[in-house]
Amino acid sequence: MRISLESTTKIVELNGVPARIWEGTTESGIPVHCYITRIGVDENEPRQHEFECELLQMRAPSPEVAAIPIRLIL
Image 1: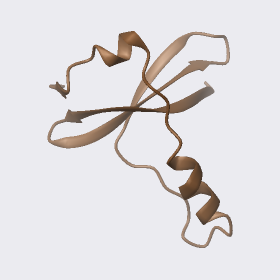
Image 2: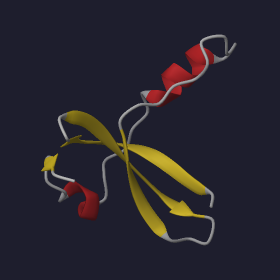
Image 3: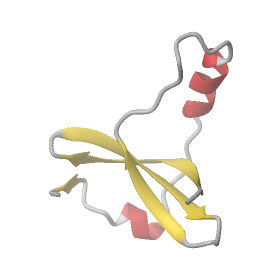
């Protein structure tokens, strides 16, 4: 499976760990949302600074994701 994701400004807590919600779609167009607690690139990646700048770009969450409680229990 392949999905495309965009970072949102929404952060929730999962088992005591902050997780940013990312929204996107599968290759076939099915909407998804993911709870990302960590993301990074290899420290030797020559474009690491570019990655860090892109990581700061976020959009407002969709109304469905905005309604997710700030604290979740899994």
